[in-house]
Amino acid sequence: MAKLIDGKQIAADIRSELRQQVSSWMAQGNRAPQLTAILIGDDPASATYVSNKMKAAEDVGIKSVTETYGNEITEEELINRIYQLNEDDAVDGILVQLPLPGHINERKVCNSVSCDKDVDGFNERNVGRLCLDMNTLIPCTPLGVQELLKRANIETFGKNAVVVGRSKNVGMPIAMLLHADGRNDTCAMDATVTICHRFTPPNELKRFCRSADIIVTATGVPGLIKADMVKEGAAIIDVGITKVTNPATGKTKLVGDVDFEGKLKFFYVSSIPNDTLYFIYC
Image (cartoon, rainbow, N blue to C red; front, side, top):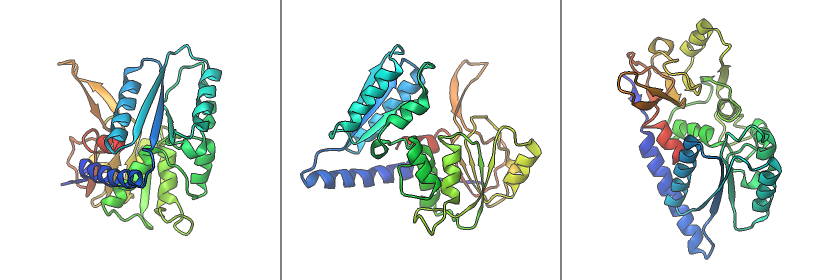
């Protein structure tokens, strides 16, 4: 049977560590760090994500401020506001919740956030530094995956890792962290990495997964990874998130990419929603 990684406990441990760090910082006469989030429109999912992030920040002593704007805001207005936050010494981190309305160029907006305040790690300079194994701000979900593997004592050095999903905010950064060269970065994981995506043939996806010591899946395709695709002793981190509706009851729930109905033989699993999702918000 699979052994579950206790994402909730790991999140609690990290929060405790952060509380101590913030408390120590403020005890030296410094102000509380401040995170400012920008939310555009009235999408319930985006509002929930921002609310959870802000609650997590407040829980460890970080001051959180949410600025909400209507869908009618222009790209120029949004970028100008970000520039103001970049210059505000009272603001330490800036988070722009995606997706943005169609008339706003997300890449331009992400690049307008100061690299030093880019808590999502989406500025192309921070992405480039990650590619070069340089110290940088790392996207939150990939960093969470790294922490889960590290704190669960899962060996990555020289191991075969498969990342299923190639999104620029999750899948690709996870792959870069896994294959990063330890000679350049003390946080590097030195794995041999294969990236699979929507055009990877199903038989090839199964073959790659069967050879993997570590699988990280982030596709949003429920039940994509079956038990017969994972070898015994492998570790799997599921960060796929999909909301599904039960046709009989009309109730919805969050599910991951891994089919938990099958008999799981792999060793470590971190699943949606109780483990990885909670951990991401930590």
